[in-house]
Length: 184
Image (cartoon, rainbow, N blue to C red; front, side, top):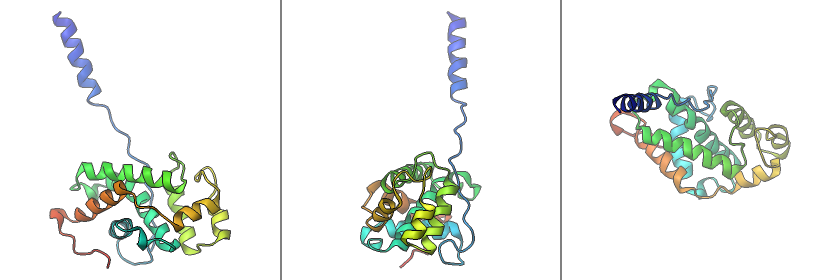
């Protein structure tokens, strides 16, 4: 009996030590958000601003693309970068879930590497037209035809989980919760 109990405790201890793999994380080149500001802060501010109200992206492919790109980037960056160690683990998890929801909404493959998604979105944000969409919004990264992806970007719905995750990240972007850099 004692031996069985020890084996059970040992097995439970080992399962608690399982390592959770880091989420796919992209790199953003300088100026990805049309600014010289820090990309991490621009991503947080862009996402919080854009996902708070669908009217901010409706009919504006550049703003919508940047909003999707911000969530895509933050879904990995907040968890993998030691810079964000003070941010709540729940906020980081919510941002990963928000990325999954945005991917499903826009037509991005759930298993697409984040860098491939970000690269396509950057290219599209620089020239949001049918020709660019046909060139960069292709399988296996995108699951829908380019014109459907563009139509969804053009009319992003309100996604409560995404709004909550981006708002929480915004509130926690500085140690102690000082958030003085929100976009107008």
